[in-house]
Length: 228
Image (tube, rainbow, N blue to C red; front, side, top):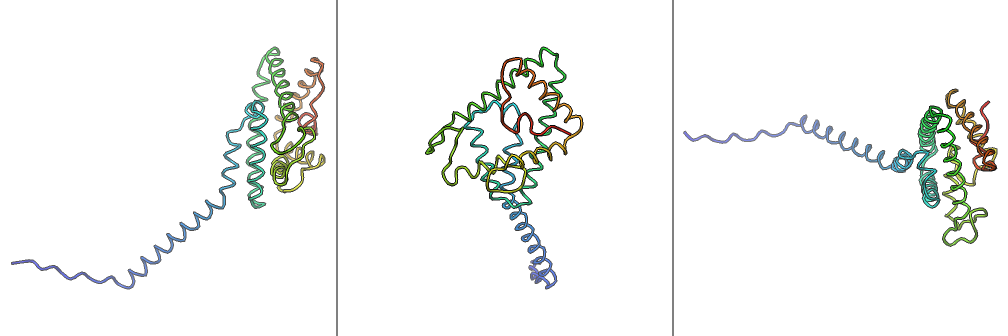
């Protein structure tokens, strides 16, 4: 006997509603995830910029590379909310404190002779970095870095990047604001790291005197304000 196909049962109203709810929930969740991913894209790029950054890379990079990075960071911060800026600042601070701790731990584990070589290397790097900035001539801008002027839109991002940590944008931070920011960073560091930082910069200044060189006048002197 030939078998006959049974008629397909129609989908119940309850099943239709359930499928519609599941589909809507999935779609809303996808939109929410997509919006969050798009909204935080500037944060992710900023984080990626400094996640691979080390103190050695910063000191050894070319002046143009450092300036381009600072400018790009400033442009990204202009597009962030205050909350996002605060998150980026915290991540950047934590990253740089980790870098500093690694540098100081490595330095103080060296022999006195190796420490002297390391100090000489850091001093040469710092002077080369400052000379590089002073000798830079920006495209379309007259004069050297010691008396820089920027076209509208060129200097703004750089200024914002240079004052990273106060969560604001606009003009370059005043010396008082930079000292306050440095003090806040010191307050969030460990006592051991503050002691190492003090000892390191004392050694650095002593070594510069031995070489007949003066302290480099940037970042509030060596490392900003002294730990209390």
